Length: 309
Image (cartoon, rainbow, N blue to C red; front, side):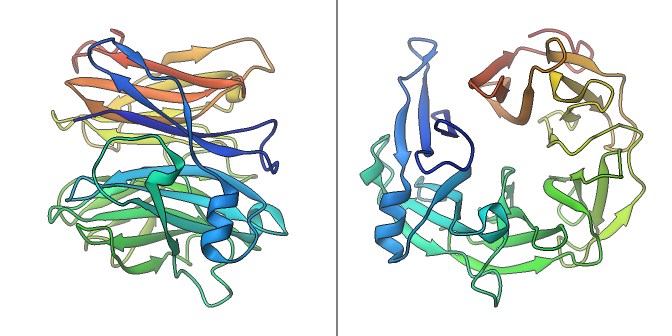
């Protein structure tokens, strides 16, 4: 299996020159390939027949045919609040970083109002049948979670809105078992703790639960379970803001360990928007590094020893 990373880059967030970049990990050379532009707003706009001013937040997924799908936020006039989620897909499973490799499937049909104000951020939750659930959020007027279902071939199957949980965004879902899932969310002020929602029927209904005793100040969190069953979380603590990125571990997703530092710097620095994957028996982390590049770490770790990168 190949490892790839996607991110958006340009002179500044939400500028017209922002494109989606992609890099592959070379197992033989133990390094990342030279980044290539994988998605451009011009190509998306031409396929959709409408202008796209900005791109952001790429989320990749591999279907049962080993084709790579990429979901990106595309905006028109109005900035992020006027965003839509664009679905792109490789024509075949041939490894490539060429922009021509991705066909524009279309806009996800997420709302009656021109699909406006839906954004992706976190990795999909894998399903036992080979399909997945794509976590998103809505943010026009207020913020609440949205989840979309796809079958094993990447065909859209439907969605659920969690409209009774407000002021939260960017859900990071983790499966406890086939029916019980938990999602950790970024919170909006004045809240300052990681928010949690639970489902006991595989995403049909979600309920808010007690917030974690872990601070958060309007910054993304990431979470996953290792093959051992252990839960992991990355967050920016309120006390240090985005100048510090920390990790926690948990046996049950409820009680979390003391933090250990993944990255930090003086006030004003930034290590944010983390992501985690388990690949080749290693834990891989990536995050925004100073808004100038992508930081990454590969951890050879045991559950009893959380400090062994």
